[in-house]
Image (tube, rainbow, N blue to C red; front, side, top):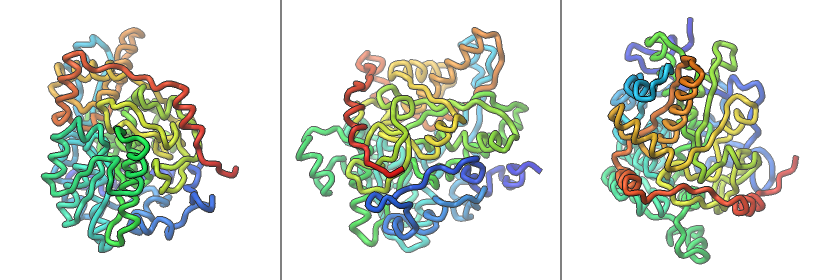
Length: 453
């Protein structure tokens, strides 16, 4: 019996998350303690995370059961729909079959509640009273704020300054859920004050905001830290997307030849692709997998695969990932969710092992693709998702040139209803492409920590 069929219940929603660590032919490198250089243990992570999530982080079990309390909330929007983009296919005059999994149907408008809900649940079960976190575009912040409201937890969100200014409605949604939002870097933490002293006009970065959120959690026994991407357990929670897509593609009588997802920290990309990659690793089906990132923040395409801190203030453990350096501050592109200096260790490991490929897309090309998608399919995508759409369109046009028909599946990770200023700026010709200078990337990489072989 197909494992996915076994996992699906009568409501067509998976009963468990998929853990790709069980199927890796070579394990990903361990997470290291920055002081000792040795692999971290549960006690090292206990000040920040509940033990249930720590155990998921290091688990090699193939499937982890989803608690019923979490599934009962998921049922509000899951299974999320999978569509075939027939009008886009027609507009492109391509023989390709284009499908997309739409995560914008969640209450918060993106895929982020898939991990926000279980993270809030496990923290509540262990008696935590408050969660602190960072957010780029605001989709993660609003999702965790919603989950905290569901479970009666307080929520503190450090929002990257450029997004705090660009996206007031996303900020308003976070506050409507009852969370407190602070622009980062802020004067509320030692990390924030140090950054502001050196760069008073800093637009911020996810690395800085992570440092502030971690500092708050580390100094308050009632507060835990919550991360919306990068970590193994976060990526695993998102695999409910791909598990559903496996079933839905079978219902459609098709199977993807190409998978596409935008990448910032790696969560929505992993959520769609990991169950398919797992099948490939087990010899059960082949698929080509494409990770798409912005040219302005090219961690996979131009970063170095090395141990680095996950934050700018160097409060986190060291993880081996594709990184641009923890001091890297990308330009203020509108795809705020893709402005992170590193990539999830598991995604980086898969790229290193040759199981996926990576490309970078310019901001204007991404928005052009998003507008074309809006006018053919009717859904206005988030700026992050526009990168996946741009890559899917390229794949479809390649099919047209070659005269081949391939099935392309991408993850439409969220809607852009709170990103209208970005679309107004694009229509007015105010947006521009950014390519981070190679010398500045080199400077940031020069500060990588030294790790013994």
